[in-house]
Image (spheres, rainbow, N blue to C red):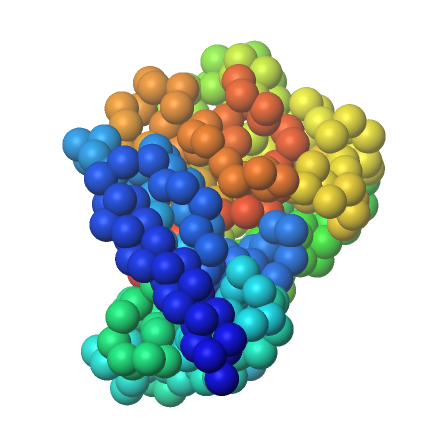
Length: 384
Ligand SMILES: [Zn+2]
């Protein structure tokens, strides 16, 4: 018995170390904690680990994103269960010292299992208890069983409302250098609506945003499915400049909640562009991209899920449609950082919103927790 007591005392010192860590982490760089919530996979969509010194506050000051991991969950439906996270303990013997609980202010929002850990990697299952239309933050804690009070690790859970599926209509010019548009293109040289929306959908699930192709409008002009739009005011065979963009806006032709428009070229060699993040128009320069595949077609995070550049690019432009990345979307219109995420990333991840001058074209799947919220809220507004 004495031996066991002695062992507990040694572990108790470890626990005190954890308490010191908590205070210390609030004031400076974080040491490696011994009790920690992590993603089950090496990288994980819907998991945003602590990233010391990477901050989203306006002043640049450290915030809780620097030391508390975040995960996301839908408030209802199939994604109202989260099985992406685990609690990591220093040893099998330590497991008895801890319990996994929902913080007192969050018990109406989520539940978590198991409550009594065993082993050193404890997969946890989080379930939403709260339907509804607002974003809320709940807290899961690892606490000491000795007093049921002392918190040694925390995980924030962002509850996101299920939004109406964003239906995207697709259009492309019928010949590469004219103004005539065909709805719902399914042939080369562009990414098909189904494959492009599937790409965006897979990346936005972590934000509880779903994407699907929309059926085309009934034909309203003489020709069965072609419409002519005289947007090329300067005759350079490119969509270039605000005057030409306004022709699209004023035409009334593009009626989807989201409209992906393949033009021949965009100004300055851009591959894709969103002129106005308040709009529902995304432009892709079909001549600027090879289709299918080639170039940066492999997933930079795990080498799998390879798809065409253009599908990945549509997903990236769809991110701009959702006002990502939230940290830079309000920068001035001429700022090349605008809408792009060129900040430090967790090891092994790549972000969907990397800028063209900083690894652009290798768009990954990882998103910051503040971008889950931004994407979810914007989708709610734009599908109304
Ligand atoms: Zn971009």
